[in-house]
Length: 140
Ligand code: HEM
Image (cartoon, rainbow, N blue to C red):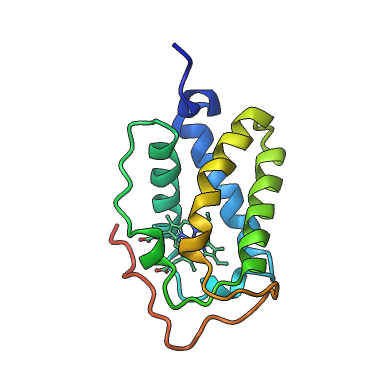
């Protein structure tokens, strides 16, 4: 049987390394980092690791909100979504994730675009609306 994407990526250690490097790249990217000013990054990092690991066939369980709910009233544009995907591809290249695995991961994200983008515009660096309420911080 073919190995799962989770195994081919290198398991939880490799997925954690990808998510942490991706988070740092997004934090430094002025095209999208304003959207994260109210966010608890510890929670976001954990949620992303669980989401990717589960979707790739690993044993983790994602316990966060739906993509629609998590990104509601954030006013994310098409251009900002594309910027985030660009940051992910740059991270995957930096960490030497193979082309086949990259394509599988990106194939999972494409269908989420409609649930996340609220503003049909190519603009980037748009502010987080003042009324936006983030998730409660994670308790450690
Ligand atoms: C396919 C692309 C994306 C995926 C898979 C994704 C995934 C996630 C996940 C799993 C969470 C955590 C939800 C929770 O805590 O319940 C989250 C939260 C968040 N996402 Fe995304 N996201 C994507 C695109 C974007 C884009 C394009 C932006 C903005 C430019 C964005 C901004 C945020 C922010 C600010 C939060 C934190 C929300 C909060 O503090 O409550 N995301 N995302």
